[in-house]
Image 1 (cartoon, rainbow, N blue to C red):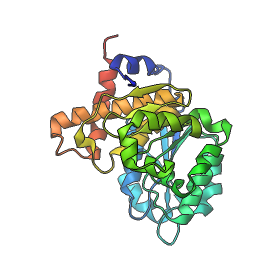
Image 2: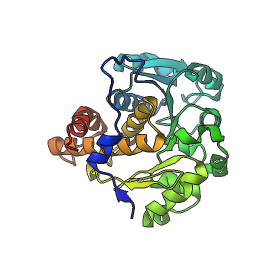
Image 3: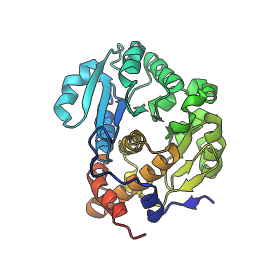
Image 4: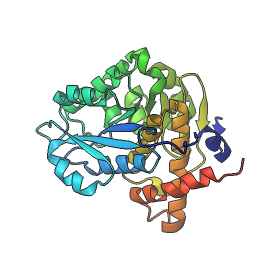
Length: 298
């Protein structure tokens, strides 16, 4: 069985924030997310990031959604991008994204992107070509469902700084296994594919598994059934993406992010009840979760 993460381990992994730091010190995260049907995923991801210590966040979004999202956003910035007929980000946005992200600290690709063929081509290109620290989630992973062998072809320059965050269904699509097979031995599935994909694999679900390409593996003890709600995974993408942008190594960022995300869900459930929990409650509880880690006794 994988070793359980502890609050003390997470505390030790979390870097100190220098008193002389400024927003540039703590990284700039670029989030490629959202489509006509899934505009909320952008806000959940970016708000999760901004509640996790990143200095700046910019969201690349379908241009027609930019005005609506601008009214909902306060801290994150927006980059309007060309769209497909279905209202998702078009592959023609690739050069714009590449140029914009060149000096950014990390990138999240996937929440709410949709599975439009043009958008899927964009996600694959960014995942395979970018040397920027990367978190690939949701439709960013689904982009490889019909071309799963390509994940093993990722350039070695990107391997140390990649985190993939599939739920069991996405993991099944990426591996050719059944969801039942994955759930029967989650640790084995994650440890098999992390080195093949040269990425830290976060296999989400009860007792989330975090597996690194070098064989390190942990299991998460935080979280509760109330977090089985739409948008909770988007929040997690933002949390881990923020940690990548702050310079943490992929496995450490994933371990911290998963633990704190689950702890925030536990804090929110105590106040709201598991049955009443929604993704926004997790975001609101993140500051309390970070404080609990910072105040934990060694």
